[in-house]
Image (cartoon, rainbow, N blue to C red; front, side):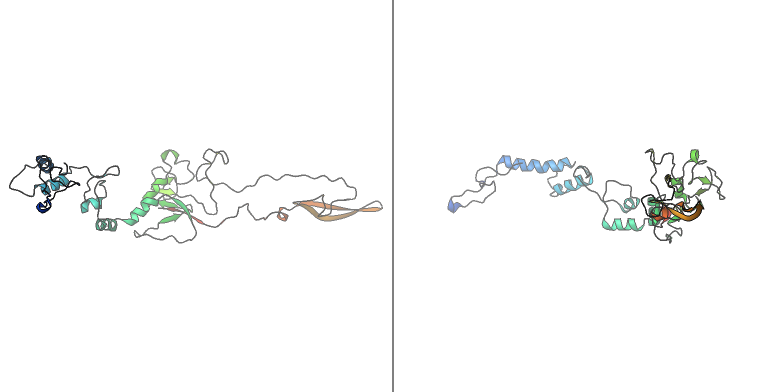
Length: 302
């Protein structure tokens, strides 16, 4: 295809009627230009599989429509431009077609028909989180969205998605929790129930998983409190107990003087002190070893 370039064409390759009074001739339609236009249009019609028909004046439109219908161009993808095709309502509901587009109404209808409760459960079931309030809400299916990790034995019939956290038949006999069992809690790899861990009163610790800081641990195993060993010594060789007065350089930190004891030796009396260890003088103490913590409830989504 090309723009008219025969005698009488304007400088920008356009047609003109000319002006005889000004000596400007009209544009002459050349055979080259007319053939180019004819073949371009005919090529579209015949390229769509239609036969040129002298009596019809709508074949170009019919050809373009047919090429769209026949997908003469490829469907659009993220890698290339192309045709797009609207999905049927059934396809929008099924959600399996990866090529067609959906309208806003089709999307709204599809979401409206989605079982959002099942969707939420499928997304989160098996995830363990900590929650700062004791109430666990009930979803539209009448079941709680989560269970507290309190050591209960729960039904896999009621909460089938908990199979995601089962350790499997080979580890069912040794797993510290999430093993299958019967309703009484007896281990059974084919059991209809599953045992939850009891994490009440415990704080989480990252699984060592081969790093060597907390070696030998398996997931969900519980570890009791402990501290590093505290050792120390002191030597006393004073005849008159000099230097054992509380606050002097001889005693410091957790060591302090205890009960004062007096006794006579010859003409002179001597004073003796017990030596006491009281770590509360330098650190906070309680009935257990603990870190600063917040009381939160462990739950597992079901």
